[in-house]
Length: 305
Ligand SMILES: NC(=O)c1ccc[n+]([C@@H]2O[C@H](COP(=O)([O-])OP(=O)(O)OC[C@H]3O[C@@H](n4cnc5c(N)ncnc54)[C@H](O)[C@@H]3O)[C@@H](O)[C@H]2O)c1
Image (cartoon, rainbow, N blue to C red):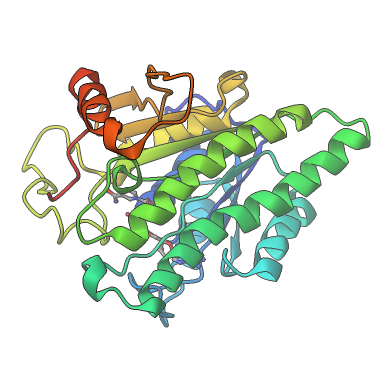
């Protein structure tokens, strides 16, 4: 492909879910530019998850092919158990294996918790949380079988969380809970899959897409000239690097990515305990808890609070 990117993923086979638009499209193009075979997954959903007549994954695959890269389209729903299995199988059948799974597909149905419906809860938790687990589970089965067959596995999973899951976000209780779940799933998967040669990391990105352009309109504005810090293409270099052999040994980490910034988000940590050496009486805990809070680092503000 006509690109000056180092081909750090040459010959690797990569699945990017939700790659028909936004950040996923940028990942798919960046992986192809880095020499990877790309499975472009997208079922073509509206922002709230309802089916769209559009077939955006086909367009992205065509873009990759026109640039001289290798790509194939998959239109499965990542949160459908059999669909997720077909997605993994398609990568293996088409390209002879699977090296990288990028879980990126997502939807939003924002509403204050007090008004949030059961359907809005279920739809968002399903696509994000089950949509991460289902693909990871089928990919892990493939990698475990490869390891058992004596073939070397040097595989990667990159999940997509959000600041809404790490710090909380007013009006996004369903989305934030799913994204926090993805953070927890990532560290457990990293611990469980290490024995199969698989690293598992996650990103909390920030970029201008249809998901954010109305929410953070000012912040997301495109500059007339200079560096467009909110372009979704800024998120992909880290994800491509995490997908490459060079990232070996980096696992169970959460990366915040925006514009030219890359940071490690530090997760929940044990606090210094006050130990009574016996069971507490409820009435005596007031001053103890207040002192713990006074000594602790204050929590990050919740987005939109
Ligand atoms: N844009 C941001 O600033 C931001 C911030 C934090 C997290 N994220 C996360 O990044 C990811 C990408 O979001 P985006 O901003 O590019 O939004 P987007 O709406 O442009 O892209 C999401 C894509 O996922 C696809 N999709 C939805 N449900 C699917 C399903 N069940 N199976 C397969 N594909 C499905 C959609 O068709 C769409 O193309 C999401 O997980 C989102 O939550 C984005």
